[in-house]
Image 1 (cartoon, helix red, strand yellow):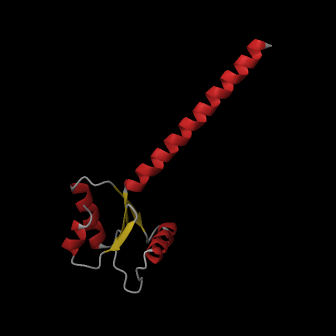
Image 2 (cartoon, one colour):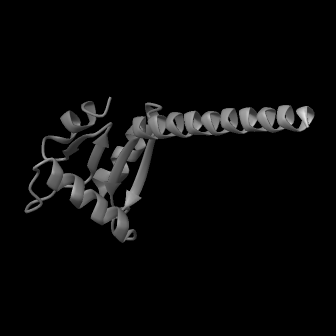
Image 3 (cartoon, rainbow, N blue to C red):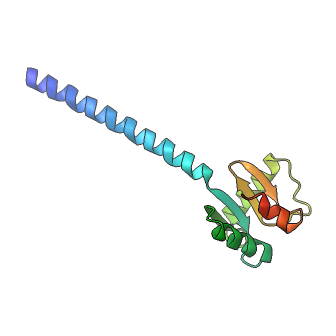
Length: 117
């Protein structure tokens, strides 16, 4: 009986530590995902392709969502713009989510690229 109780507590201890470890890994993964820049744009947009090229040349991690092909990404982008109080009336793409800071290509393109660093 004592061996069964000890074995039971050992299993419970192991299981709880395993769950805590998984939770920590999930939080770490979520934090690292938030550090990756998100670029919303279109493969048909020369500013978008130039932005992707610039980010690759400067070894800046990013995820690109083509809003022409991905409706969920388009909805997500529009939601973020609304949350940031950025008008969508004369929207210029690409739209950037840099660790929660949302901005668009509404300035001279070279200045826009400098904001990506």
